[in-house]
Image (cartoon, rainbow, N blue to C red; front, side, top):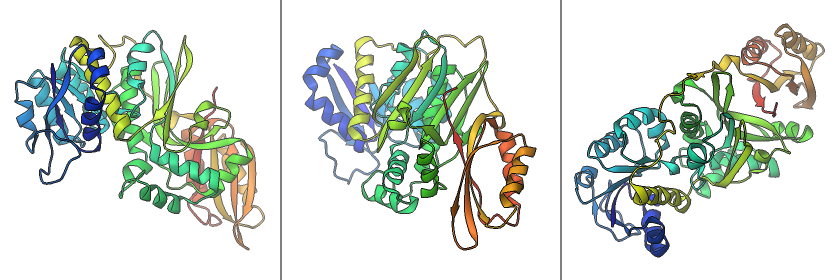
Length: 422
């Protein structure tokens, strides 16, 4: 028998207990052992739970219990979760976590502490999609050339709604909150941090690279308007928040931001609250992973798959996929050296010479215009919507700095990168 202690019996924790009970026969057959939840730790013992298990408000009571084999950490947060997981590993207990923020900051320290102790985290990225196992095991013969992922269902719901119905950002966010797809404070999701944490975990497995959220380019979706979708539709694009990793020699680009992506690409067809991740290997080519990225049952399914793996053999794969460091020594590419096409929305006074002046500024920064639309905004102003040919991030940023200083510019210009397969 495998005895499990759950630290954080919220939505996901309750689903773990429910699934283990409901599918007990098949889980026991696959694990080779019966798996039972021995105890759970919660912050508030007075709150009614949807499961009948012994509860405590002291997580260390579970960690110090010699009869418990596996600690499942579902408490969230970073600092306290790190202390709890570190103590569990020091006590030689296997750990399963769904905590992406914890791993975004402490994955390498925890790998060092864990050593040969099983430490699994499938549920930390894309909920029910087995992307960790795919990267760490199924694609382990490949150099990973690129990862492009829709890894936040809240943002994907909002952008899909804006695209399909012509809705504006504010009302769509409110609807997402009412439906339970967005938190009361949605900042973590809509500003891209949630997707960034997941990207960093995948990048460690794919490239052996250690980076923190503060080291990479992260932009959210709050500046996107219905006008941007008009341009996207006109020129055959969808707008998605993508988490992107790209290998260029010994450098890796890591970035999270809105993207114009051609509608014929599979990733562009992932709509609503669903997640989708494209992985390109040097020999396998492109593989695509699609499914629910959040929710109690989907996340619990991934948690239990890790518990079963541990029950089967005790030791699992190397935590981050490498038994020894990559000799190539991958490094993080500077954001200013990103190479991309760009889309710009610029609100300007509708007067002669404005378009020519903007074109001149772009040209002086080695940027050429690929396509352009002009949309009247009022009797005296217009929105210029244009896309560029490929240029460097530092070039577009220098051009924008000059453009925003012009007296004919009436609002902060909006820039969205264009991601096309090269």
